[in-house]
Length: 470
Image (cartoon, rainbow, N blue to C red; front, side, top):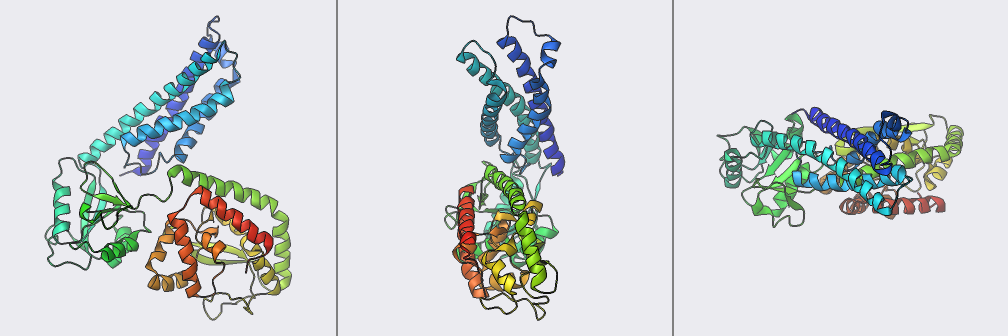
């Protein structure tokens, strides 16, 4: 599968649809608004709004569709959902264009405004949706005919696993699962898949198997639907980008976190996206805008803090440290140095309230969280977000996961400059406190939204202004 090529098909289709829709609407608008005049090329090309629309409006529409998540999960599109999404985005975009480019037209009555609006959204909708429908239909037909498939691993090897495998392989209309092997869930009594599929290993190595074989779907089909077993397997892989599906017999175990993925599939999808695509896009946009504004406004603070660090003790002004971010990927987190140089010569250590490794200026920086402000650059780069679980080092993550396996779920989102755990608990001085703080971050994960982010940012500003950091 060539995902980039598939995305390009939709991008070109949407771009041309927006361009043609605006050109046709503009010609109709001229003829309708000024019916006494014959529409000549000069009348069209003399209007700067025509060229503004031709060159910039297609980009505006592409941005809207990107924010709506149109170009994500490009091979897993539902034509019904795409219809509703196209209608909603067309209405929103049409309103923006109408009030910015058209409302100043001289018309004979308000009925003309309504008429123009429906012509605008009607043209754009049909020119956009019909090519999309064709592309999606051709793609879905290729999936049903097994010309396109998603690398899939089955967890389990007993009766349920064999039944799922047999049903998927004998379907007249494939759901797209290209089963490459199975893993043992530790519950096998009779191995019924050994004769049909490669045995890829144990479920505890599932994360490495997913990476090695480019797995896109994992099907949990264990013989005894034990809640602990299902949760262990899901926890092991939920921080990966794979789609997790279960046998309907296990639906009662995970009631509330499952959804039907296809009318043709015998399986149910687990754990849908944390936030709607449009909110994820706005969250990223907020990260960029707020970070740029913060860097500009805080420029004198950056300079003053850097001077303070320089005179506080010998050593570099900035301190970089590898931290674990989205989906377990490592990145370099940057801070103003608040400790004496080589403070961790003996190995990784968490700071404490009366830590002698912290300089006098470092204590002031930590009280007002000035040491964190260089991380706005990490947000712009995309390694971090304004709000998200605080990034930790692998050394401490290993200790936490051994006692709190669900901690892995926090890597499903970007780490943040501030977090709900940071607001409610503060800095952690040991692994026990890191686990307590993580409980608040898991609550954030379950209730993640733009409104929640804004609330956390407000609380953070209040803490910084009151000097209640530590």
